[in-house]
Length: 283
Image 1 (cartoon, rainbow, N blue to C red):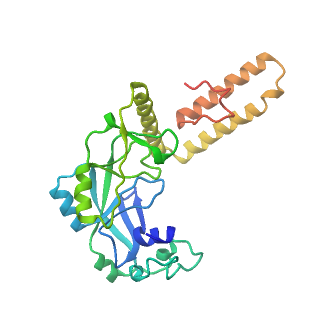
Image 2 (cartoon, helix red, strand yellow):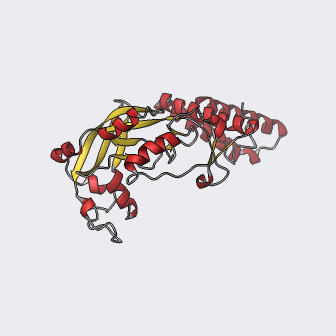
Image 3 (cartoon, rainbow, N blue to C red):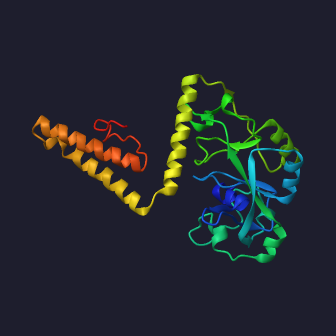
């Protein structure tokens, strides 16, 4: 799509997920809607939004690695942008207001007739599978071959909630490109066999990330307040460390700092920061 974020918004709209109600929601323009497209790049796990005709092909091919859920057309606005000159350097119409791309949708009214024209939509939710290894930039990332279980559609287990790509097997690529080559772009991802040490490191990263996700879901407002207070208390103790005169006082202060950081880490995993490394012996 042309026009940067404006084109992206016109093409894919906004996808949202409500954990409390387990609702998958679509906010977009219509009546044109691609038969298959991915959700926006953000810090959420990506999904594919698909129409019923797509379900037929993936079901007949017995593709694996995903869960299907109905997606509610929460807000569909009428905007026939597909008739604009797509070769033009700028869109025919910019959104009103502050001209943020989202305002193509947020500043217009829902149109139920247009929503009906789009038909039923579904969220195809890829499962997590495989480990992605990045030495530097994500563009040079490689999949660890022995971490793959053979799913046809999946997201990786490490970067799944940070602008993740959706990965597909050759089988899935053949099925989808046969019918939707005008809507989807496929890029080959290199794979390699990791040694035992690297594989262990990546598995530990994955477990830590899953634990943090679990704790985030469990944390209460009081938990977060206590966590921040313990961190702040430890930082203040470190800031005053140079004023201590005796080795005994310094030793006690270090123990106090270490205890506070350990207590904070038990509530929610801490990331090492430069100010704490000299004083914290992580359990």
